[in-house]
Length: 119
Image 1 (cartoon, rainbow, N blue to C red):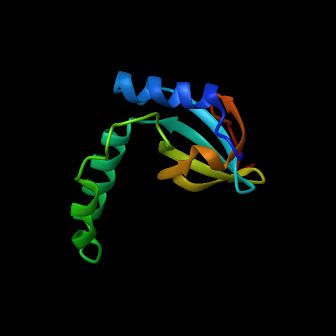
Image 2: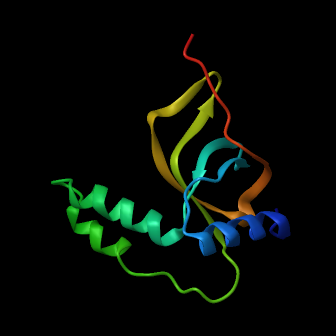
């Protein structure tokens, strides 16, 4: 999108203000379909920091995610928690991942997450 969808920005702002991670959303960005739950950026950063801190090889990167992002202006990114990239009938990764997507890169979206089947 050359100009971010104002309604999607409003959804992201509501997630940010509510400090909740229960809003399910599916987006198309760069041709990829990403489905999962939105989280406030601070919650997302904390979780990523914890995962990195537990890694012997990646713990040095943990501190990068503990700094808070500036809160001026509307949200510019969606922060997905327990998310999957859908490829055919499979969700990658199976356990869900942590994705950050620029709102301006979203070309389509819908409320809710898509189910998939490994059958």
